[in-house]
Image (tube, rainbow, N blue to C red; front, side, top):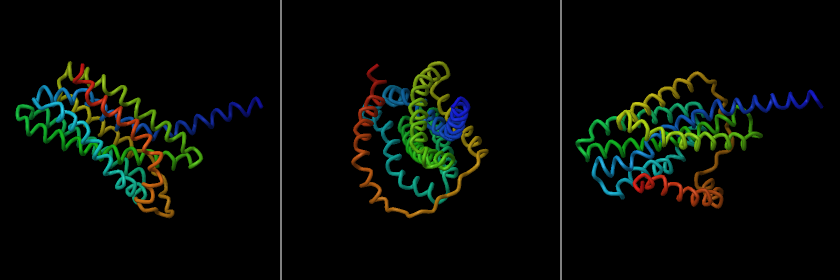
Length: 245
């Protein structure tokens, strides 16, 4: 018994390490989301002189892109593999940083800046889909289906940990370095994540029975509605609390 417990702990830590190595890409992705999250509403409302509704649109359009691109992200992971899906997503995160930086540099032309910002948010939404889907399936492929729950749990930790760190970090950067620094930092994060992902081994693509999107949707719907209702409150607060302060 005395030797079994340490062996079990080492095996447990090894599995956790294999999971964390992959969900780190989720952390990077959501850090690119969190960094501008608390700054964007004020930028749109104050610097670009648009109303609070447009400030809300600038935030929520990313999540609309995430919603509509989820089926594509799932098909990409199934056909090209989780690693390639994550690489696509991190590339999209870096491109969103280019557009965010461009929006900052074009801030004197309000409509141009807003258009660049919204396009960047749409691209970031696609990146979120690809990284989120790819990282989970990559993690499950590394540790096996029996540890799926742990992969999903650690992915959630990475998601909300990055948002918790990113929002105040973005505010501090904007105050000390200016709004354009956020775009430059997002580019760097996306590039770093892409480089790290290329150095990790891919997992085999599992070719099993493919269900239609409609079938999957209705199976998940009763459970997903609970998550959707909870996320609605988070989204409303995250978008407008900056303007309140």
